[in-house]
Length: 214
Image (cartoon, rainbow, N blue to C red; front, side, top):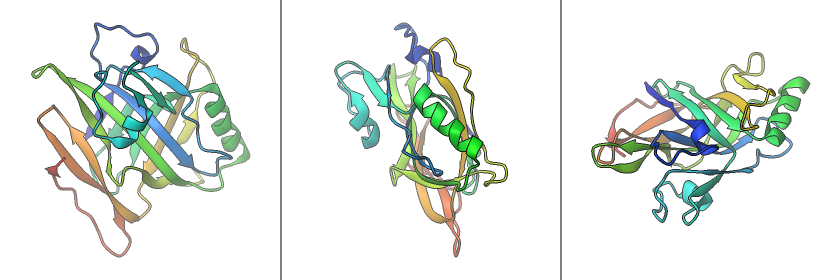
């Protein structure tokens, strides 16, 4: 089980003395949205200024001078049981514009559950080495596709339009593999320890969970 509880509030009201697990939803495309959710949040990240992330998609959105990253949402939780067919469940906080677009889609009735793109970047602090490391991101390909768990009848997709103190809105979704591609996902527990795990399968074949250097 890979379960990250991120301190999303620290991205909006930063305490420089903290070194919390932090996560960012970098993109979310598909499910019949009129347009892709926009990376319209610019928030502080404790990742070291001037250090280039291994995840190139994060590097594109990270300002190494200011320490801010542009993202679709700030992650509160990320969970995956580790099986190649298991859903990845994410809760993140997004802007009002993105939240309204999802709510309108749900009100009208979701017609397709296809997710054309999803990217995330989770970082954590290694107390032993006194360094930040990249805990999770899609390694290969760098953009995950799939489908919303539960299908159109009971989609694992929700947005809460009640704002919080940071004036952002809770967005929850579960993405399941579509059965047409196998991905390599990076998971790390420290600066020195990381693995690449398979997620997804192909209909005429299979994938099994195995640890390989990440």
